[in-house]
Every structure is written in structure tokens, then in C-alpha cells.
Amino acid sequence: MVKAVVGANWGDEGKGKITDMLAENADIIIRFQGGANAGHTIVNKYGKFALHTLPSGVFYDHTTSIIGNGVALDIEKLFNEIKSITDQNVPMPKILVSDRCQIVMPYHVLFDAYEEERLAGKSFGSTKSGIAPFYSDKYAKIGFQVSELFDEELLKEKVKRVCDLKNVLLEHLYHKPAIDENELLETLHRYRDMVKPYVCDVSAFLDNAIKEGKTILLEGQLGTLKDPDHGIYPMVTSSSTLAGYGAVGAGLPPYEIKQIITVCKAYSSAVGAGAFVSEIFGDEANELRERGGDGGEYGATTHRPRRMGWFDCVASKYGCRLQGTTDVAFTVLDVLGYLDEIPVCVGYELDGEVITDFPVTAKLEKCKPVLKKLPGWKTEIRGIKKYEDLPENCRAYIEFIEGQIGYPITMISNGPGRDDIIYRESPLKK
Ligand code: GDP
Image (cartoon, rainbow, N blue to C red; front, side, top):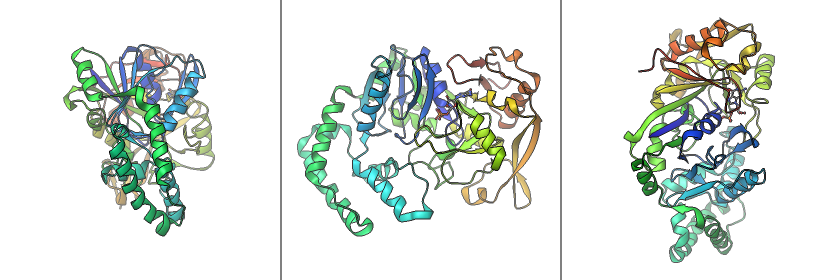
């Protein structure tokens, strides 16, 4: 049984917590896209962790954690992350790295920073982790696959070829120091020795696991609106954030993905530039940011303050549709308990008309939110375990949103911990 945990919006919806929670009953957790450019925050018995590369199943000793072929693998960061969790007394997780996974090179990180510098004010708000240069090279067919580290002749030839190309750009476009071929080759030898014990033919491993009836979780990074095809292009990430891509980025048949759990936060937040229709500003935004998440809405990787907004039904309906949602996990609902009234964005006004289908970026920039205010519940809902025990206005909020987005909300998260979860029977669940 393969399940995917993915985001409906801009990321930071709480996928890490949901994956960590579902991992209790899973055998394998696999990252299938993205790199160390975003993080998941997880709170459990060992403490509080920000994971960037490792799947959110590393805290259990019964699970295998896999870095799939679709991931941008920063080997240095992977090892630092393993160390950071084992230093906090988490037992060494069982980790596998796909032999088809490609490697984030030191120059990818530099090119990311140089390009942001060159674009100055017009930059995309990159986290400078080398992700865009990495995926550009992957599709330009000059990336380095993990398997290639073990073929010395090929490696030498490729290092030379790539350095020749990159050094032209470094010298003439960016006016920065050239890459030293020998130094790069040494780095790659070091990477080879580090990653060697973990390298695996992951698609064959997963094929076996499926035959044995194992439970496999695909863990997405970011959310639908950051997808390069279906998101707010060009303010997107460089790999697909959709559950459908899970089949490609892990190496398993698409029809094996039986459950798609799309995580939606009870309000909105976004990082980086780009249209954000239900965005709020000033004191209203500051208060939600400080109360939000678990200790404020700040990036898990970058610590940047997140942009804040009300729940966006238009974006979330679209986000759930593109994921192919079977279940919605509605998270961070406890945070809204301070509000007398809770605005929800139910439509976009575009050229004098109200639309409820999420438009392409150029139109999105012109949209204004149509807000509807729902009554707040003004109480603490953490600790509640049963849906019926939630305050009436809180249930009304959930049910209103479910009606607007049209996908079944079957899980409600009312706190950052593993046990802060309420399961719900949804009338929309087929
Ligand atoms: P991800 O990237 O989708 O995994 O999301 P993040 O980990 O970046 O952001 C979610 C934040 O909200 C983290 O700090 C979580 O600990 C926290 N969180 C997750 N679920 C809940 C919840 O139901 N309530 C509260 N208060 N915090 C939550």
C-alpha cells in the first residue's frame, strides 16, 4: 500500500508532522522531490527537529528512510542532518539513497547565490541551496548521478567537461573565481566514500516491498502552488510537488498510490515572492505569525518570517484537485482560537467578476480576495480527541471549508505533537 503526504498550498502546511504520525504504521518513508531548500518541523519524544533532507520517518526504528531518485541530494547536508539527530539521542536510522539520485554540487550553491546577486531586486527569493541550478543541470544532462561516483574514468571526463562549461559562465557572466578541477574531483571522491554504504537500487527495493505488502509513504516537499507546471510560475520550485510525481521520483507504478493525503493549514502562509491573494499585513499578520505553527511562522530552513493570510478556498480547492486528494489533513487549527471572527477567502475578484477557479499567474496578480467572516470559537482546542468535542463554531469552520474545497477533511491536527490528531468521518469520503 503506497500513500502520499503532500501539500495543497505554498508549503509549511504541517506535512512533517502528518508524515511522522503516519510513519508509526509504515515500513518505508521516501522523499521523492526537492532538496534541502525547505524544512519540516517535527516535535516528538526526542525533542524538536527541523529536517531538510531526511524523510520524516527517521525517528522510528522500524522504518526505512529513503532518498529517492527525484531528490536533489546535498551529501554534506545529509550527513550533517544525520549527525544532528543522532547527537540528540535518536537511534541511527536505516537510510537508503537511490543510485539514480543526483548530487547537489558545491558550484550549484554558488551559482544560486551569484544569480540572485546578478538579478538583485528582481530575484526569485531563492533559498540559495543550489536547487534551481541543480535541476537545470539535471535536465541539461550535465548532472552527476550517485552511480557515476563509482566509475572513475567517467567521473574524470565529466568533471573536466562540466568545469570547462561552468568556468566560462563564472569568468564572463558572474566575474567570480573558476572551479578547480582537481579540487572538485577530490570532493566527489569524498562524497563517494560517504554515501557508499547507503546506495541502493531503490525501484527494485520498492517493487519487492510492494509485493511483500509493505506500507510505503511518499513524502512531498512544499505544495501544489510551488509546482513548476501547476503552481505560480515562475515563483515556484524546480521539481514537481505533486503526488503524481511521487511515482517518478521514487520509482514505483502510479497505480500503486492508493491514498493521497493533502495537508491544508487552517490559515495561509507563504515564503518567497509571488502572488498571494489572501495575504494580510500589519498587526493582523504579525499576531497570526507569532501565534502560528509551533512557536511562530518562520522558515524551518531559512528562519525567514513567513507571509501570512487567511484560508484561501480557491487556492486550496485547486491545490487538492491537482494532488488527486483522497483525504485532507486540516492542520494548525488550534492557532485560530484567539479570533472573534475568522475571515476566509471564498472567491477572487478579477476584472469585476468573482471567480472560484484558480487562474494562471498573470491573472492571479490582479485578483482581489472576496472574504467571508465566520464566527470564532474563542477557546483552546488542544487536547481534544473527538470531533464531537470540538466547539460548534470550530466544527462549522471545518465543515464550511470542506464544502468550499470539495474534498473530505478526515484528519484535524490541533497541536504539533504526534497525538494531537482528531479523525473524522467525512460525508464526502467515498
Ligand atoms: P511542512 O513543511 O509542511 O512539514 O510544515 P512545517 O514543519 O514547516 O510547518 C508546520 C509547523 O507547524 C511546524 O512548526 C509544526 O511543528 C507545526 N504544526 C504542525 N501541526 C500543527 C498543529 O496542528 N498545531 C500547531 N500549533 N502547530 C502545528
